[in-house]
Length: 180
Image 1: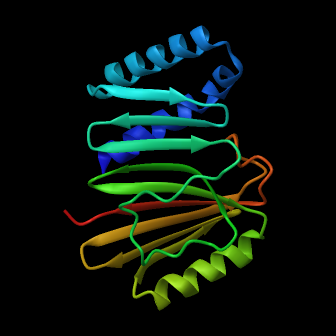
Image 2: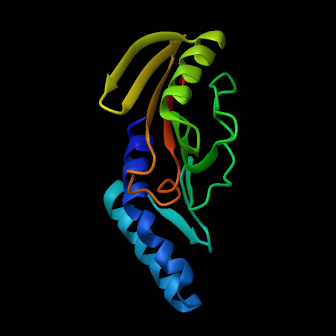
């Protein structure tokens, strides 16, 4: 799970590479190579970076990170089927490896409605709530099922410095630690 979190943090820091998507092909390739070297230096693992017009994909041994400015990503293959995904939300980021997944969603629905729906639906899906905290405008839930845990953070979107979420009313962060 530490790798998932480390790649998530690194990935968010590298989100600014969307500028490179507008660059010429040679400049884009140089940016990809520079990112690959930075990731290897930070994590000790080799990674393959691909910058497309609206998406960045980072693949590494046993995992993958994706970021799409306007959403349109799919859930990682190992994303648990019993974790609720808010209807109509856009997946703007996903990171996965064998120990867990991190997904960030954006929606135009209000924070209170989204939080209430997650509280209700996760329990319906058999998850037991471990904690629930509200800090200013941020709601955090922690759920457990067997040996798996999931933390869901729901926050205002318009105040975020994350490409793809700046126009969303609400951002949903899901971090799932998988059995294993």
